Image (cartoon, helix red, strand yellow):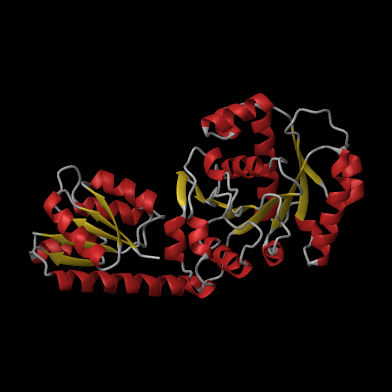
Length: 386
């Protein structure tokens, strides 16, 4: 996977020249013709390195660099400043603003390429050091036992509710049938598929961070594709475990959308989770399947005290299963019941906005907030009692 470099430069000729040089070196190049545009591109694209001009009309490079350093999402991104201002005071100002290196124009192509590679290597080394630090975030898996149970809707709305108070990464583990992007009003991506093509030892925080899509101030997505011919039955558990380890170091919460495929080679991932939410329709017909799932979770070593049920009435049909009956048969607590609102759900899907944002004052949104509050209490307050 080629490393991504963002060039922020208002001179078109310089932009073309440097961009061509870096592309010939095998890098993926993103460009921005000004400081404001550059900051937006940095947030959206998560580059491995920023090549930053100093003299720009809308915002000079010093201010751009200061803002990058003050943004927790970008503070560790290497910044190489390059400018026709070559005085000692100019360079000092660049380093004071937070630049990692400073190159004067005109720059020999070989020198620029060497400086870029040195900074990228330094960034990878720092990422590896970070990777040795223990994870501090919490993981929640969301899964169902049959299609149409509302797993993705729950994952999307719960993540939106949790992001009101925590840094959240929502991961789409449904290769070949991912729908997170559509529900969040974002095009489907292939970030997950790209990362899973790498071996666990090749994954590092920089590579993972580049594939995360920012959709709200505290909510990012790792998207699975929606390609029907993409293999769905196999997800390499070792890579997923490594991904989780890395993401849990930079987010308070990681939410996994497993769809209805929780047992497809991801047993070790389920064991790794701090909580597992089983999404079910309130229908008696699912009892046998649910009991089988609970037995499977027990066999692979999942602590059932870290599991709970969310009843999702996605069709509006009258419930044929009571909460008490379900809890008695499965020995799992029902944490929330989401009422049927088919019309609201259709509008949310059509608009690309989850119910939490489309109808924030609705009873359904209140249920999602209550569930989020319960999970936050359980996961971050060890003295809490459900």
